[in-house]
Length: 164
Image (cartoon, rainbow, N blue to C red; front, top):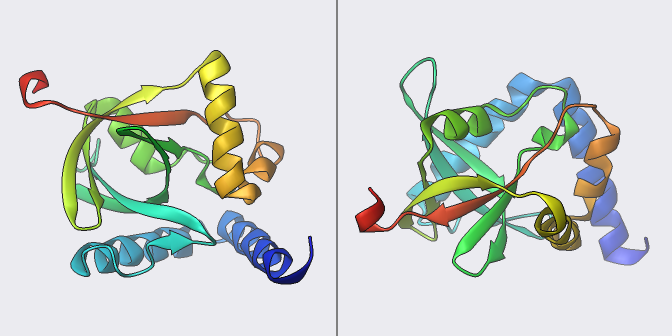
């Protein structure tokens, strides 16, 4: 770890540690990031420490209210791979619980809305996606060491009109 990449990785690690200690601040930041990203058509912080960001819209499983969350993704053909890691926190991210329970959500990417459904990756497909995700966001390698809870890698697959 040297030069500019090393500096970015150190800052990202520090922000992940803060995220684990200050979950309310992280939720507030994520909501603000999602709103600004959506309002600017994806021009506000389209990347987080080098990794691409999309906005995931779900419906709260308890509140029934629309929720927007900015999350990192890995492009995979017409799918988007997301990691329900919550920066390695012990608490499962609410966006994942909402999406899992609803079975569908919407992503906003560069101002375009796309209906998606989640598919939890397993086996060799998960291992390959995890390796590729860690290539675009190396800090993700540390997350399993922070908690014992499962952290699914989820493919957000497009929902076709005929699937609705």
